[in-house]
Length: 99
Image (cartoon, rainbow, N blue to C red; front, side, top):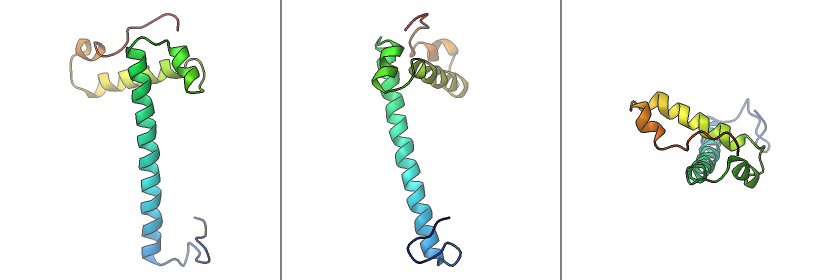
């Protein structure tokens, strides 16, 4: 851990350690929420027919970023939803050879 002002991590009172942990948790949740919102926006665009390369470029990422991201979301949905694969796959873009 790093120092918080003049109080070192080793001698910090418990309330200060708890405050640091809560702040770290809040930052993680905020950053996770931001990533989730981005991922959903990418998924929406892919479902609406935008090309994966265009979506990736708009986010400043490599050409295959959005395609791989959508595939990971789809695969997790297939594993975790408990629904028939045909039902799950109906909500995702069809596999495309290019774009």
